[in-house]
Image 1 (cartoon, rainbow, N blue to C red):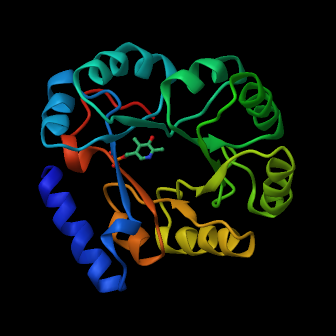
Image 2: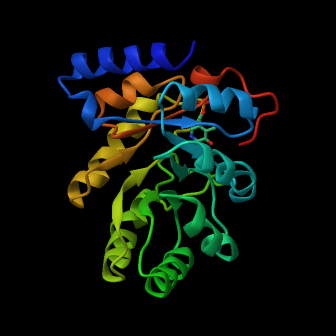
Length: 219
Ligand SMILES: *Cc1c(COP(=O)(O)O)cnc(C)c1O
């Protein structure tokens, strides 16, 4: 596989869903990938990437940003409050806002810095104890809480349980977003991004299908 094949599959899925490809942003998930594979994707003019660890992103993206214009990197993995300030410097968007304490820290930083990355609230649609994310039953209240703090909410994000039909989770995420007036839906990975597009995904997070298998898996 590779970037152009994924772009073709996105175009086909959009056509089948009656959607414009402009509505679907492809986040190339570059975690753990060797720098030469990332450079190869940048050289094909792709500019939107995803990382799941603050430290790892800090180690490689400043260099790539110096070499390539218009790079945008989204944090798709968990964020500790003590790394939030660093995350402001590294990412154009954070997809893992999942608890009041983190939201409050981000709100304080946004005031200090006079700006804030775009934010997605992560919803634990499968209610898995080991997984991050606000529970579906708490999502409406948490969204309101974030809005009351003037946070720039772009939408919702989910990672469906591995052993369940992802569509059910995509549909649930879409429903929570719609009833809260949110447009962004960060959902869909290498194995299910076409279904996610059918269910309204605006940001799909695709790693191994673009870059090849990760050498050592990270999250
Ligand atoms: C690693 C990761 C992805 C990409 O996974 P692939 O199966 O390689 O496409 C997407 N979302 C999150 C949150 C991830 O951690």
